[in-house]
Image (cartoon, rainbow, N blue to C red; front, side, top):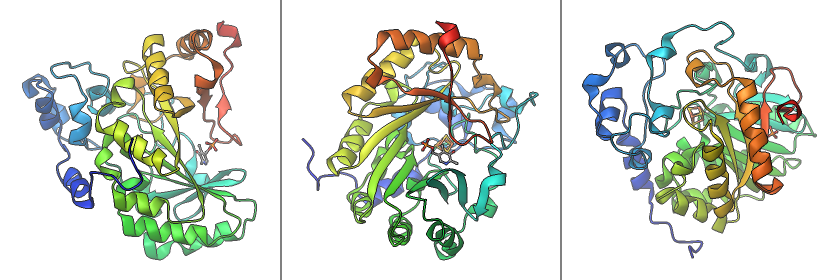
Length: 340
Ligand SMILES: *Cc1c(COP(=O)(O)O)cnc(C)c1O
Ligand code: SF4
């Protein structure tokens, strides 16, 4: 049993992990005992979204397997460089809902803050891979417009820290931001959308846990895991620490061709989440972002697999299969009736 005060990770461990990240495709290939000479030459240059992979995440990849589901999420492919009709740089039209620098208000009662532009991992399917972060990184000194907006909209009861990855920012920055949010009385919940516990568990330091539990806000964390193989090793300990500090954990995942597009992969993921007391929340179909076409699954196939899962697992273990329409007032559940 992990107690409230025990985290073996300190700020220095996390900073070391940030420094030691893999940042080029050849080193990534070598780290999993594959031969970099087998890589297409064009992958070593002109990537519009550079390679970024924490060592801890690499540890959970199967060595020598070029089709490892963790590797394929972070390994650039030449297919990324093709323009495919219907795939755009802003598939969710987020630019239209950018009400203040760093703030996206699309849904009733909750706003999303692009609280940190960077991530500790670059997932090749990321729908924000082209987001204009430069214009949307207000930094600690410049949150006043976003905070004024929230303060002036009394129906906003939840603030979602997103990114990038909010937990790739440092503790002081997060503390300041959380303090500012907590000062707005009608905000009740702080939600954090993060992949950090999954890709870089060293981030869950004592200092971070103290920051996350310092305010009056109810804190919910939506992690992002796409495969059971990710939920092993240090990540399990990081997740248990968060829970031991009273943080409720949910998971969202993306349905990805070649990664988790089978009944077995989905079922294993949901069983692992259940074992770890993490509520499966959303299973997203891929947003059509330029460069991610090779992860796309046909709707009929996705629905068929989801329909099968529904028959295999109790309802409380199932995520909602959703799609995001740029102008809808919520995520939209995908109707599977026809597929059954
Ligand atoms: C997904 C999303 C949310 C959160 O939606 P929930 O259904 O509450 O999880 C909020 N704002 C934006 C812009 C989103 O994309
Ligand atoms: S962690 Fe999330 S925001 Fe960051 S690259 Fe991956 S999918 Fe995108």
